[in-house]
Image 1 (cartoon, rainbow, N blue to C red):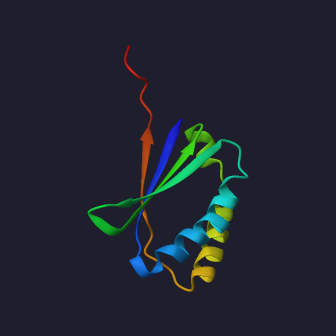
Image 2 (cartoon, rainbow, N blue to C red):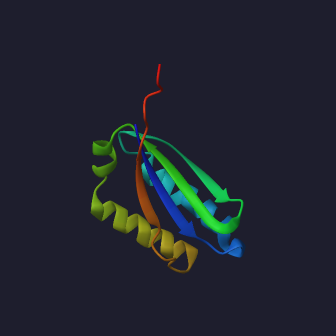
Image 3 (cartoon, one colour):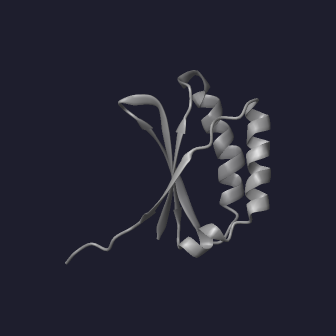
Length: 101
């Protein structure tokens, strides 16, 4: 399994709309792709404008197989629905380590 970790800066006043649209637009699009496992959203307790989207994929290959053109279109749809563009998130790839015996 691999984790796609996206970190956004979202003003608190915009977060409810951001999260609702993320679910209906981004999660709906990603969940149709083979290898998508699930997604969680976390808010930093020390920095309420910091939102972290934790997306689980069964492999890096499955994650990277999502077409770039689709990602661009979904981002455009999201920005249009939100009524603005936010700065691009930072993206970190995390590998899950096996538990030691």
